[in-house]
Length: 258
Image (cartoon, rainbow, N blue to C red):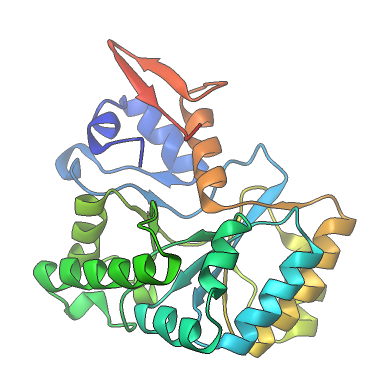
């Protein structure tokens, strides 16, 4: 995570307002130490982020992998629970590394889908370390994790503590493409907005929806990018930067990964 909490504290009131309007929520002065929160990206770009939660079903993961191989220009973000990391790796060794090596991103979503609203800060921090240990084991190296999505969308103090302590961006969503495949592809997908953060799950209906949605997106000039790309572009828009470095007063702020 290149934009630190200290960088966020340097934002002016006008910048805070602009960030809120564009989908990047930054803590108020009274809550300046809260982790950054994103629910939508920049409206300047004709792309969305496709994110898939939980990731329990290895056969559906394999189906998604095959589908994405047909659309190599599309990149997605996966939010697996820790038990699914081990379970899927046991059934299909190397599956997580394949997704990673193909340019897809992996974010934190708890060890076994516990509600963070009933977890202490200490328990939540331990949960993240357990999850990260599992991800490290299945990948064979310790990756950079930039994003975390709380289970049940619970913006609890314990999940905020996890994000703050580990440099994660608290990640929500602006729309969902789950549910009846025909209805979603026909009515919901065509209503996509620039920078949408799309929530789905690794389940049969959502993989079927993805097949129809991907075809529609390609035919209509839409892209699918990782959360890192969506988030970095939003930060560069916020800072009116054309590159990764911008000056904010006397300091140099890093807004993206080179």
